[in-house]
Amino acid sequence: MSFRNLWRSSNFLKWASRHLSYNSGGNEFIPFDGLVSARRCEARRSLLVEVAAMGSALDLYQVCSEFGTIRQMFHYKTKATSGPREMILIEFADSLFLEKVLKGAVYPTQNSSIIPVHSPLVWLAASKKSKPTNHTLHSGTADLPVPFTSEEKNNDVELLQNLFHCSDISQQIQTLYDYQKLTELGWRLRFFTCRQIERALSGLFPQASVLPFGSSVNTFGRRNCDLDMILELTDDDEKTDNNRLVFQAKKSRAAANPRITMQRHMEVISDVVDNFIPGCSQVRKILGARVPIIKYYQDFTGIECDLSMTNKSGFYMSEMLYIYGCMDPRVRPLVFTIRCWAKDRHVTSVFAGRWITNFSLTLLVLFYLMRTSPPVIPPLQVLINLAGSSDRRETSGIDCTFLRDLNIVTPSENQDSLETLLRGFFEFFSNFNFKERGFSIVSGNDFVKPEHKALYIQNPLERELNVSRNVTFEELDRLNTEVSNARYLLEGLEPYTGESQSEPWGILHLCNSSAHPIALKAGNISIDWKEFFTRDELSGSVPSKKKSVTVNTTV
Ligand code: CTP
Ligand code: MG
Picture 1 (spheres, rainbow, N blue to C red):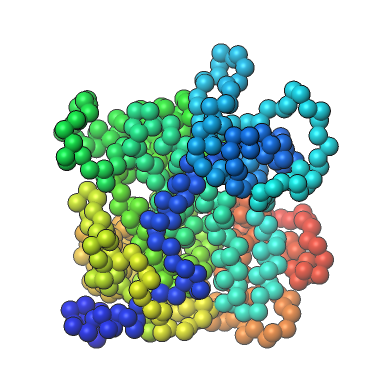
Picture 2: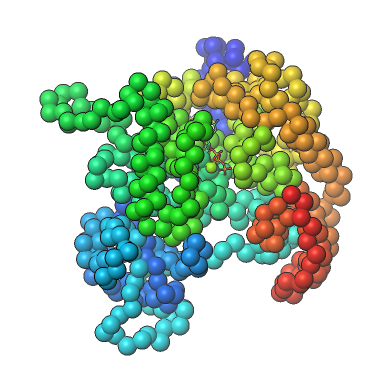
């Protein structure tokens, strides 16, 4: 029975309870709304402090705990425009404690070039009273009475060794995901970065919200992914109907054209970000784009940021992807591996252009998982049909309603391994007729393309739009070629024998340069990694050390 007929049939709910795939892998499902609001509260209680070194943690704890209870502390190093910095993120038990700290904080001493901005970003000055501490890096943290985590940068050599030692391709896919997914600190710093802008604008706009969306929250983001943010000046949910006291407000000068109004507002906000907000560097306005954005780099959190003010559909789109990621534990590792392969083969790029984006690529994976037998995940229309009144959302006339509580659905009957699904993905799309057909994750079906574009992927929320209309015929050909190459490469792999491997194997063939430290650092560089490690280093029997290598740049 096709999905379309299924939705109409009276047996639908019975079918849904059998086929809807929710298997969180033993973890309790956290609704997206709950996750976002908990993380925003955490950010409201958080202070980011620049320190001389990790050893300052105890000193910092003593200074801050005078203002209220501290819950936990995180240390990391970041590369700011002006050089490396060491930072500690402190979470207080209550946002009132943070406000007390900020009330007590002082501005840098008389320097006319300093702009005295009040923000939850401070630095710890050397104490005038106490003698220099003898704390070494670790003794400064060992005595801390609260949980303390220090996050190192990705150790790519370790990843490579782990991938080498996995027992099968499925384990490699899972390892790649576990290693590259956003960490706890990564989540916190992203919400903190949003909060910094929200707080800066709160004097004029106390209801303003800055919400993260895209790969930072849809759970398909790598550790170093950029941060997409949406700024809304008012809170949609605030009810004012019965209130007779109405704020005096200015009328926008270009009220007839909402796009021009938004561009003007963004100009002003961009200037505020550029001139006043600590740590925001390399601020650029890209206001002529279909979605106007302000781009900047947040030096203290080390995050590339894209701030927009358009409708909230991108946020709901992220919620939809989040839900699919939670439905089955295989979805995220598979998406990560396909993204990693695409990056390695230059099918995607960090720059916007005529190639497929990570977002479209994710829809490709979801569509495939709807077409396996039995399906791993259901089409979006199934989730729309199951939505209740609390699931209703709408933004700028776009209906974003779908089931948001996965607790009522049961696991998929599909038992395929990650390896089978990865092979299946490449096989499925090497046979897909992209030239004539497009597809929809709403219906889970493919159809004759309604427009003459190389690639047609229906936008799941604004259904008359094609999310991949930027892709050229030339880039589609490259995608097709790479998909077929990946398929044959996987088909030609020797089966894993269980013995210690002495050659690269499995997904190291697919994602090798992405997993390689030099390539990761340098971007578009491909390298013969065999030259880089000796076999013993790869098998882990001796500690790895870098050797000089010849690097081929294939941009
Ligand atoms: N988006 C959308 N409609 C599009 C393109 C994007 O709604 N046509 C939303 C999606 O929620 C997407 C988000 O905007 O996740 C951010 O887009 P982008 O930064 O291109 O993708 P990411 O998923 O964030 O991936 P990346 O890691 O490459 O940034
Ligand atoms: Mg993004």
